[in-house]
Image (cartoon, rainbow, N blue to C red; front, side, top):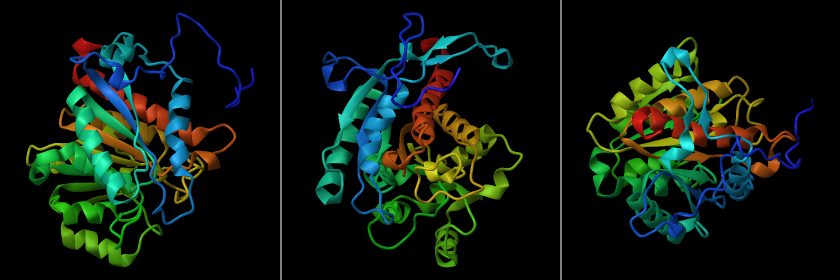
Length: 319
């Protein structure tokens, strides 16, 4: 049987419910809560590379419907089938015009508001500039104790305001760089000056080459220990261009030799098992530039579900 194209109508099976099409957060009753909310943050105007990343939140929502929200039995974990949908998922809609000072202010406020109603939020970018407002909105008044873990080929320490500057901007906002861990940094994707800047700031860098032969869960455990050293909230920045270019053709800055899809998925799930990780962003995908099979957007959708799987491992009795 040939694979379905992105435009092929999806089949219907009442015994195989699809992920996605989740209720809107604002439609929940006043005291209603959810375990996980998705929030579209379609920023793109300051990107260093031409991009239509603002089209991506809608594309990820559509791609979610290609998958179920179920974990199959796994004897190695002593786990039977798990219906993640029982955790409670909601859609918090999109931020209107998230670029610029006003857009970032709206994003910060909405992140804080959503976290009053949901245990965790995954922000669907947009370019990597969204990390500033989503992280600050999630940290709230706890910035001094907060930590950041990035999965990224790049340091994101550039000067100015762009998708190449969110880590530097967060440090300038008050985030302690000693509680920043960057996983997947690659050769030939960064300058020597920004490498020196990361070192001088005290940022922990786990180079892509250090990941060979290591379990993603072990790498993430190391990162969370550092980022969470002060006991505060941890934001997870998932720049999908950390992956190999053959895996993510819709990421303008992806590099051949990057992470495999299973590594990215494993890192995201491992991060979400930690209760200090209540917020994450998925960024740097231009859905309009994806391959015919939609592989980049589908990987992003699976990362949303991997985050949900991590929540289930965090509280198995809820699933």
